[in-house]
Length: 623
Image (cartoon, rainbow, N blue to C red):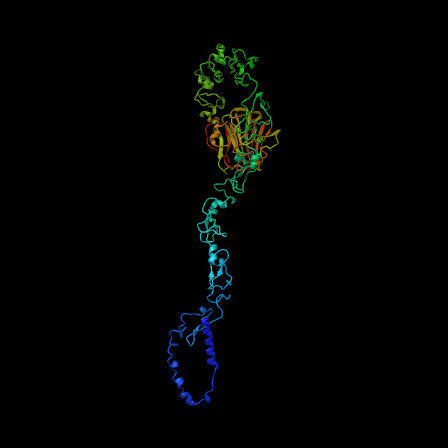
């Protein structure tokens, strides 16, 4: 207020100075000359302080020295503060006439009262609200600072994280795999490393996942020991087995058709008599096929087998007492029939009752040396008996179609028939083993014709137009085998078929693309060693087929005629969904024909072999 009073006084003095004028014409001139008051006004003449540029007592300023003061020190703006002639500060040149707290933001002010220039805490990197203006018209950030800011290491409401403070979270908490979560400059999670680890739902199977979305890693229900299809992936990227479980699996105690013949104790109400046995009980194998080992026929008295399982076989079984050949062993037929006719534990020539017969006196003719009987009861049979030396069957060489198929070790070298290298010419396996996608036989055929002097001759041809040799379903009778995975079914040929000099009336059709003789086969490995050492085999295309899938709906068809049988694998797929369309025809005269239509498959073996340890002649290049 003192300064403001001075200002009013100054203005009044100025007004007096400039507001008054007078006319000196009425004054005497000598009054001016002799005005000793003015001349001698020592106060004016001797006033050397104000104006000397030095602020002295009673002065607020002096000339240009304003004592460091500015307009803003008086609540004004601008730079018009000056020093008047009385050495007092003159604010008349300053801008504005108000002070801080007038609500108007002027130069030097950040704010004024409640006028915050539209600013809030967020404009200064803080959260929330509460910005205010201090008494000096500068922003007061104290409340904002209490709200916090990104980078202070404290997680506020709007932050997911802050610096190294991740609130205890990791990639796994955000549905990603692995570790590596970090915080970005805006205090939000940086997911880049987590995303690189992957997440359930990205369609990519990571280590902890069995599947992801529609990506089932090529699996289906049957790969998990269930039947049919319908496998899916759960929201947690693990297999959803609900549909598979509804399809059933071997071991669940429920017989599922057509996949199973039994399951634990479930035989669909069938017993041994439904399978042409006379008595006994069925057992179920671990692969849900029927085990007939406890099924029996009534005792057959001349087969060397304990048919009824009572511990006695043939004539030693009381069931055979009425048979004419049971009771004694003392004539030619009874002493060569391989039966213990009198049940005394000795068979044929080993029975003293046969000793007087010619057939049991020596082993020295072609007949006696090929009958499979130890005729002279010396412990050596047929060609292994030195008495047989020089006979046709035991002349020291096993090298003819007849000798290589008689079941006799004619040269006593320990190898019989096709297992003897001398029989190679008469037991020649013909095959080609194909690797993945190497098969070059679609729309081609192969024909095998038996050669009386050796094994088989073969020829190949092109199918134009592509067609099977027999239209599937056109037989005099037709069967659909409906085989399960890795199964076989015995068929009656209806005629005698000679294969590598052995005669067969029955064959076994396997689900994996082959026909065998003597025994059925479930092998799916399609390797050359198994091919040569297994049962006699016609391998149309040996591979691991999935005959239980819906894609193999027609399964395997067998067409029977009076002089031939055709087996067709039409639309059968392997476990990767690759399809084959193939047919084999076997004829009464021993001829064999292969037909290959559209075939898209992996590795496999095409050919024929007498099996049972035959030598490996090397591959054929069919086409």
